[in-house]
Length: 569
Image (cartoon, rainbow, N blue to C red; front, side, top):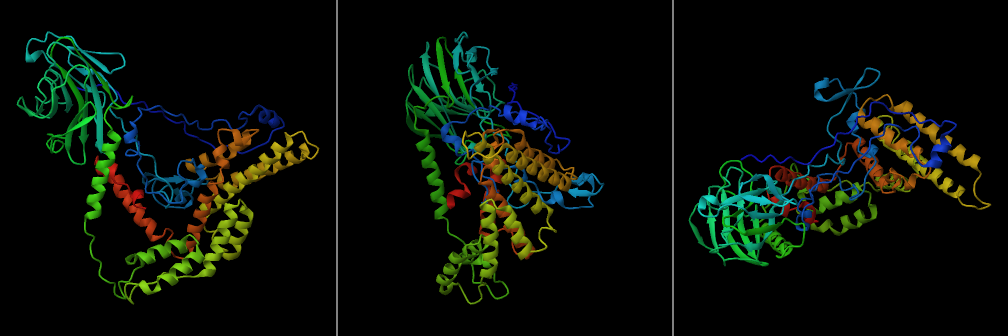
């Protein structure tokens, strides 16, 4: 029987077709007073879609880490201009089919892969089993409106009168380990109840475990059944009031059960590997005699069994196996093979130099000078003056003084902005935000009934200066038809639409943490201009580990749920 349950809905977002140049009409102050958008019509609206919530023990497992830059600020929404691809501003002669976009003047620009450090698109959410499927059940079973309670309504005279049901979604292997519980509300006449798992190809007129690709733990005799009608002694029988839990472990390929919060041990080894074909595994329950009623819990309420502790134990076991594995021996590099990545001390030193920790780098280099593997091991170039310049520029950006940072860039690296419109775009967008921050502060001061409050005309002049700067940005970057650039401009300009931007829907633009993202982009651009790595080697190692975990996750491997690169730090 085919599972006809539909997946969660998706929302299409409206595509912005033009960038609105900032203007300040005579009636704009009225819009500011109302606190509603005035001339920034057509902004994309972000709608939070409600999806089935994962149980607490799976929250961390399904939180996929992205191979993005360590400079990203976790848990915070970054402005769009901080994630615009550098290739967006690069001319290209490639064909439109290869992802090339066109400028308004007819020239072409690339929309290639994102620069280092920019986060990739979020993975598609996984659907977990949350209730029993009304359209994937035997006719002898009745399911409550909330999809949790099952009642047997058949004849119950022969084995062929049994009925089974599957959950609304199959279990994604990416969760690593999945658990659900079933409470026996009534054992009915005989208590012929089977609880377990099955694939969608299994018929629904038998108890779980009696068919191929089906596994079950039965209540009348406590036997476990694996893909056949012949069971073996496994655990105690269960009856009215008992709570039976089911665990499938995609890492070890095992299925086990619990009774009233007590783990009964592994019931089926290598169960996952024995599944015939590319089939998904569904929680499944079967009933056989009149009066049998059960109710499930897929994480909507607290489990009887401490699954979180069990999950942590399994995770610790896997990490122990990983840590016990012998590491390959690396031979000392020759002069020709010397590479900083062959020496962990050089990896750390290159990280410190990259991010401008000059004093720490100098101390670390001195302390580890006698610890090098061999005379042939390379040493990371150390130019304290270059570090000082990069750190000075970074400090000004982090403090919000974009003008001073740009002046220092022109002084120390005179060609970098002219050759890098992507860098100029990010700096000017951040400067627009800093100007708005100043105007917002002045506007708040005007609201205070004080003789020292600034005159309204001064605040209006400041606002017109901000608008004038935004129009200049529009003239410079509005020629790019790339939707990423246009959306970033619209988002940035939307600060003008609110009387109090710090309390508006785009208040995240004013978060000082965003300065760090811009500062890191500037630092990478300087290093690239010197033909030096834009990303330190140790960060590449972390990204590679994260990318491997992501590939495992996308491929449906349960390993990714237990092993995350960030836990090695």
